[in-house]
Image (cartoon, rainbow, N blue to C red; front, side):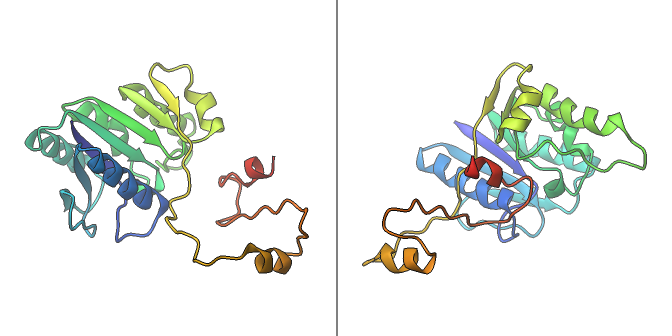
Length: 206
């Protein structure tokens, strides 16, 4: 299948969405899918076809995505959406209308973009408009799933760690447990990552 992925950030840019997209693209390619990437200038890939000719996510980016999808003969476009990754631009919310193929949007969060002062309900509306215009919707947490479960073709797919590391060999956990103050019978729980309201630490503790 010819799959296109549109992302607001991609390596060497730093960010969770870019790291996730890179892993997703490579897993799809390993399954013999033909994967094509679209992102902004400054991104780079040595082994996957990447279109990175735009500098901003304005109205011209919609037509650039449309041309890319047509020229690459894509069968589907997957949007990896996070407001901040697309520079808070409202234009990306109209991407399903511009693309010439079905669009499935993964919402890394449902935060609304900044439009203008006192935009009010319009900010919530524009995010939900992207969800309604998409042929399919993927969300990554329970809170967002509750907001979109009334839409057809939705799925909750939590995002796991993107840290691909194996334990050094030989590895002995005892010194690490002692350093943390855990005895042999204690259940030791560790959290690696940012600590704020959106990172799921409350779910981990529950």
